[in-house]
Length: 397
Ligand SMILES: *Cc1c(COP(=O)(O)O)cnc(C)c1O
Image 1 (cartoon, rainbow, N blue to C red):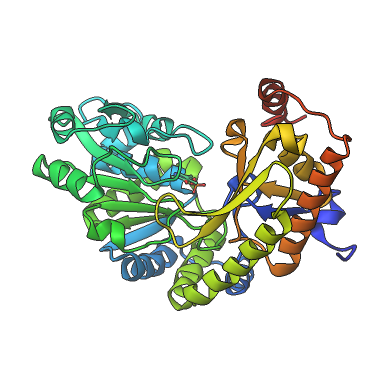
Image 2: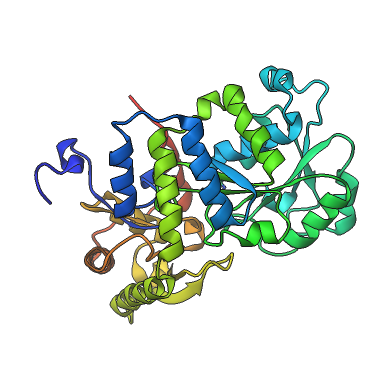
């Protein structure tokens, strides 16, 4: 690492990302062609509407949509798409939001889809002035329950595809869309972290939303794709509640180039390279006391496998939460996929690091496990660990 490295210059700890596309550590490493496009456009002036027209054509082609545009994030896309479904092209209504008087204002969401992606999806809906109508139970939704939730007040139905969502007992996107359409209700799909681009509109989505900064490896931005009238209505919100969700020219240009690059990426070769990293980690962990490691498929069917690691504290002399905190506190800091630590479980994700970084992850993990066996590492309860962590996030001085 050179001294003019921007991370070192500001005294930041370098992070190796074995967690996937997590926005709290910068989501993804931008593709070289994206970086080139971003630096090429940053010093220039362009008409943003015209640049968004280029984005619209690219999004239409890649996502199988009629039109599209780029916004600040997927979270912004949810708010804008809901707002567009409420107001249509009515400029006065757009200016009045989030006051929803006189508009359809309900958004039907299956209970198992009411997730947090770092903030509640429900809040992104409410920001538009809408209200969420929760459908069914967290683990089971019947078609009649969706039918009953749709009325003359319904502006849209929202479908969330995510590893955070409940993966069983929900209606398929196809059936969800058929039922919503039979009631004249448009379907918005949050596919922020999904690899597939065309499948959501094919399965009935009227609007599909994607993060540009996750698998596409663009700057922080969100993609809104879908039916022309709904896309236009959502885009018009940029002169209303969307003003605080503005995307810059660099976000739009980076997204266009990232979409084009996605089309020509050799996804098979990429997966093979990722399989090698998983094998490296699995070999490093094999036979270690209290450690079980196995390859797990992506819960929503994305073509990415991960290494699932379970820690038995009695044998490993450490816990999953203490171990992953130790990795995060090192230099470089190592981030793992840590959403089920209370179950003594975490995952290593191979999609955001190279072979040299993967080697460091394996070495640091082994070193931390060996230190724990040697009795050097403190073990805390999960509750104790969690309360300390809670006080550390979103704190700024
Ligand atoms: C990451 C994520 C979001 C938020 O995406 P941003 O583009 O970072 O706003 C929303 N929904 C799901 C399912 C996500 O995974």
